[in-house]
Image (cartoon, rainbow, N blue to C red):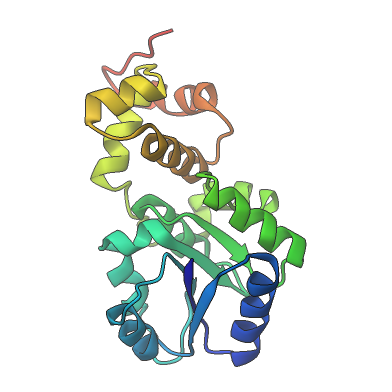
Length: 211
């Protein structure tokens, strides 16, 4: 497994690299200390399977790297890391398909748990951040809507379709549908499909949940 860790603090990069190397056999890790180095690393082979990305990089004050990842397939393999969670940016990443957020101050056990859950096809955000991410009152900037593919899956969920039905209807694998469902639930800050329906269906004219 090839990993790319992007953070302007070498100590953070090396610490995370050491933790992941010590707990996963055969892992190969690249580090990048700037957005420019990260872009160069993404052009090299072998390509990383996963990217750990610090949102705030000194050479990228307008989050150009982050935005470019959100517009590319790389976002499906991106895990955000940050010392100070920026809720709007995290919500934007979730909408685009990013797989999770891990605070830099998290206990190593939380980091490893989060990564294991992501590798298993789930989405990970520490529970204490879930409520904050669903509260949009902390920002006047608009939050990016769900990507078109996630919107398609969400529409199926609101109609009560099971994962296998969604996979068949949209031409996706069962594993991919599982990942997308996890991302949608995390984006809306709900624990299950029923909570999603209760939260959204009343606000969508013409949408009816099927038992």
